Length: 386
Image 1 (spheres, rainbow, N blue to C red):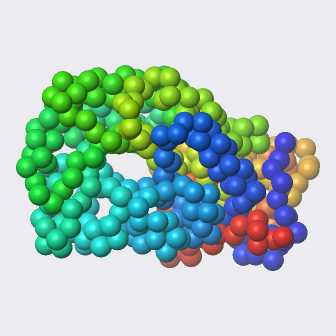
Image 2: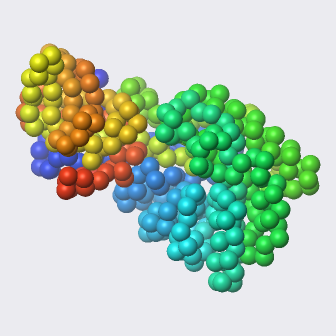
Image 3: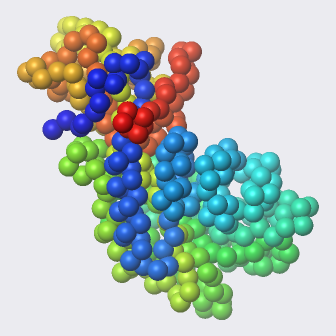
């Protein structure tokens, strides 16, 4: 079953472009709000790195979510979209001085700190402004995730976070600082995780670390478990909204929160992934020696995930109901890796047909580049076609 798209409206637009189903986005946000509200101590932040389209940010802010940012630019985008500074968290392994100063000026809720040198710089910059920075330490829990190696972040070999054996030393260092307030621990083990067992393993590790802190009579107010919940790339119509109920319930049943603690989540892909599609048109159908190619006007510059992560997106011919044929679906960029899919079954395809690459709302438009001097794709929402 194909998705529903306003095909007649698409004829007025220059391809490639991103199309966002805002009804689905709002349904997803309603589900998040409903399931998270079952637990009075849950706070959800949207991971801006997944998609910073201003129209989507506004809808997400209106739903009541906070923002998880990993750059000064993302902080500016979140503030511009109306996210309260008190609901913004700032993560990232390499925060520049100007980014830290920007976050201090906005008085954001919390810095997720990843090293002692970073902590020392935050202390120095906060002291210069006469401010106190709230910090949570990102601990690398050495927990693997069943996902692509390039989006696994919780192993000891990854660049992210502070090692568990260094946690106590870093906390002790922080306790001696006048302009930094230690309020919690932060974790994130990876992205596109569909096995709830990975989150159970994280809960077990956090429970161990909390016990270790309590043995030292250290109590904290906030635990941040990051995000990571995946989406169904193969069947976007079958499961358009991820299983947030099971996701939140897993933490409720396995994580031993202390009285008064708030549990923070940083969801990105699961919020916007399914609502977005990259819309392209067929430039040529080329017959090769052993295969035929559907050459699109969209390429890896518009959606880099297949080239970067070997990601698979469902591809649909929106213009055709002809009998199916098999194609390698490729782009126009002068790179052999500019391939969206090999051996893809599509309804009979010809020049000018509209092609949708589904489940592209996360890490699609935001990662686009102008390589080959190509124009960046525009983003449109379904609200604009009403």
